[in-house]
Image (cartoon, rainbow, N blue to C red):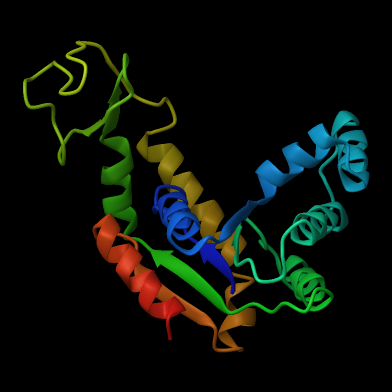
Length: 215
């Protein structure tokens, strides 16, 4: 089974992908990770990508497609794949069709984790972690049991990611909508798009995704 997981940063896409990897033995193909791995390993496409990046240019769709092809060729034919961060444009969607077809694969589902923007802002901007052990907390949803003290390691220092602010979150949302808007109609026309409530509890989101995959 080959699927695309869509959702803005903070929607829980990474968490759900990892659950599918663990529970179904699928492989998550993240274009950013694959690009870095291909460059490091010196694959033919990786060498092309390295030359382009060293020249300060953007990696072309052709190179990204080549890296995805190399990654698929390294997998057994019955291994399910989760595409993360690709495709983002109509030409990339067309290219993916060709990559899959050449390997006797096809796209089964496109699953979008829908979010409420205001609630997502609250979810992300309220996050903080223990500076010592990294345990996560939230201003509203999960405060330490003892104020100012980590439940896990009893540390007293906490930190927040500098990009966990409202302006950054809303900018990311706008970018996500702009990038995914062109590709959703392509897959909707094929009847393979399904949407789940990304604001639900993690377990409930997993249940919704499992129900789509088991249809």
